[in-house]
Each structure stands twice: as structure tokens, then as C-alpha cells.
Image 1: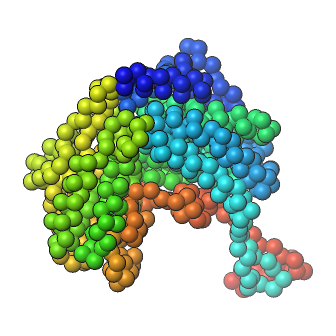
Image 2: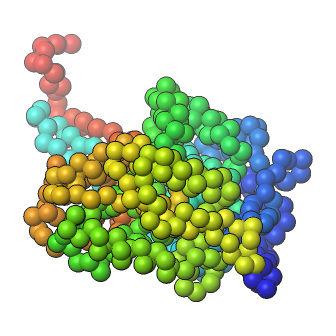
Length: 517
């Protein structure tokens, strides 16, 4: 019965969005025909079965898209920024109407819960509205010139066509963090989604492109589904793409960084996270348990901001871990479309294999599994990719602890004082999100000081998982380079120009040089 109900959900979701059969994975002002194209299958991790098919781009499709988006850029950059903002706001308004349908598609293809699926679309709506307001705030600076009768200031100008390579775990939200902001800056965007979540990208682009067409706006967004690293290599080597924003593994991010750097292009890299929560003996226990558990369990541990490590003060370690184990034993695992389910499936079989491989390595290094460590079989969804959330008592110097596993595995350690906790916290190559749970103002301030968290995001008494679109998102060390979304992240999508204007009757020359003509 479960399988029949889910199959009905699949059919209804795909039919409502017109995605039920073979879908073009190439949008270049219009949808490219699916005839004679290679295809991939969109699979649902919930039941392990096929959703529908998507055609793949060829090199000629990419070349044509780059040329077309470059032409569109020449038109789009002439729109006044506030007018661009009005159009992006209209995209947000359209997404409000499509939120339920597109949210269901996110759940179907990535295994997110109902609230997480719709929350993904809500993030797109929020960033569209944020970007709309930002369109009137692309400020430069005016400086006092040292030369008489001169005006000195800086201005920001659009870059051109940027590329966004997105990951499966946030299949549309992270694209919008880049694309919506870049659009109000005057750029066009080429989107290469993960093949593990390409159907979401097709559904979102259908909604977005239809709205742009109805508004009489140019097709500023292109979509290219490509297999494996092929499309990423095309993008990285393309000199007419000045900025590449990549979300994914550290290994792939380093390759993209090297390739783009060789042509002196720009990158925004959102790579691995190995996020840690420090739990002080001065914490609010209930608050800390909720924050750590949610951070480790949400999206089945497949967020770049998921809590991977918990460093707990020795005075409360036994109590905290006992309570955390009880939460893990009670948490509902299964079909993410069902009420009360927090932990859905991993994205695919390979992710399940990675989960077991990491646990095997942890035990080999002396780690002890306290709870979990098994496959979960969901009646009616036996082909889905479900595992039991796991807590491992570990040593912070274990090799496996220093790497990221995209699965619900939490390593726990003891600490004696805050300096030791911070050494453990910072002793990994990654530096994305961090948290401390404490009611002590001094501990909080040390955590937020220069000798505290070395991450791009620092949280006090809240989870490592999740971030608001108003703040710049990104990390340090091997987590990557640059920032997306809020604050002044818009500057990444523009070029800065320093302007000097002489309104006098002479030209004062630099370094006091005397020269007459």
C-alpha cells in the first residue's frame, strides 16, 4: 500500500508540472528538442525507482548557450537596476504560486521532508525579494581626491555571463542565491545542476522561463544538464565566463579552482563542511540537545552545514550523550512525505556505501558505535536508501573524523576546558559552520573572537545547520572561497571600477612630474 500511495504521489507531482515522460535538460531561450539526445534517469531515493528521463547537453549545446547568453547580457545590462529588481520580484511572486508543486518535486527527487521541500522553494522566494530590494543598493564609494578640481569615486558594473554548478542537496535554493543576485547586478546565468537532482532544475526553469516570457523580459537564465564532470570542464575552461560558482566536493572544487585560475577567472567555492558544536557545562541542556540533534539529523545529514562533531564538556558528557541516544532511538525514519518523519533517505546507493565505509573506518581506528549503524528497511519502500542515524564515540584525532561523510553520522568527544574544545573544533581541514551552546557570556565571546571558531559561520545557542539568506554564506580553509546570498556578496557578481574626473583647467601629474605641451 505504501508503494502504491507513493507511486500516486509521483504521478500527480510529475503530471502537475508536465515532467512525466522525457524532458529536455537544455534551455537556451527555448527548450532544445529531445530528439537524438542521450538521456539520464531521474531516480527517487524514497523508493529507488525512476521518476522520468532527462536529455543531456552536447558540446554544441553549451557553445550555443554561451553565445546566446552573451547576447542577452548585452540587452539585460542596459535595463536600469531597479527595473531588473522588479522583474526578479515578479519571479518570486510566481514561485509563491508554484511553491507546493515545486516543493513536492524537491521531495520526490531528493528525499526531503514536506517542510524541507517547500522550504527550498521558500528560500528562492526570499532571495528573489531580497535581490529586488538590493537592486536599489548597489552602492559605490566617493573618496576625497588629493588633486584640486578632481572627483574620485568607484562604481560597480555587471560581469557578464556567470555559471552556477549546483549540488543535489539544495537543488534549487543555492542556484537562486547566485542567480537572483547576479540578475539584479545585470548578469546572465548558465546553470549546470547535479544529475542527481536535474529534474528539480528542469521544473524550476520551466516556471522561471515562463514567467520571464510573460513579463516580456529577456531569457537571462540558461539550463544545461550534462553528465558527470563533462559540463563542468566546459564551463571551467570557457574564457567568456568570468565567474564560476561551484557547490560540491572539495576534490572537484579544487580542480575547478585550478582550471579557472589558469585563465585568471573568478570562483565562488562552497565545498566540504565538517561542522562542530561545542556543548558547555554551562549550556541549557534542552536547547543544546535540540540544536545538536537537528543539526545532525535534518536532511539525513546531507547538508553542508550538518553537525558532524559534538565536543561535550566532561562534567555533562554522560548525561548529554544518554539523552542524545534516546532522541536517536525515537526519531522517526521513513517516507519523508509522512507526518512526523525527520530523517528520510540518503540520495542513492553510493551514499549508503559511503555511510558504511566511514563507520567501518571509525571502528578500525578505535571508535565505538553507540547507536545506529544499520540499514533501515521501510515497508513498501524496500528499494529506498534508508540508514539508521548513528552516534560514534570517537577520538578527535582519528583520520575519519577529519573528513566529511554525507550521512547522519555524529562523532562525540569530551573536553575539559574551552581552549581544548576550540583546539578540537578547529583541528579539521574544513571551516564552514560552527556552534557553541552556553549561557556564559565569556565563553560566547571567546568562541566569537579571533582565537575562537575558524569557520565562516558561527552560531551561539542554535544549530550549525541552516542559514538565513540575509547573511553572506560561505566558509574558510578547504570549505572554499567567497560568499553567496546576503550582505555584500553581490560584489562577487560585479566588477569594480575606480573613476577619476577632472573638472579643472589643468592636469596635475602624479609624483610631482613637470610636463608642459
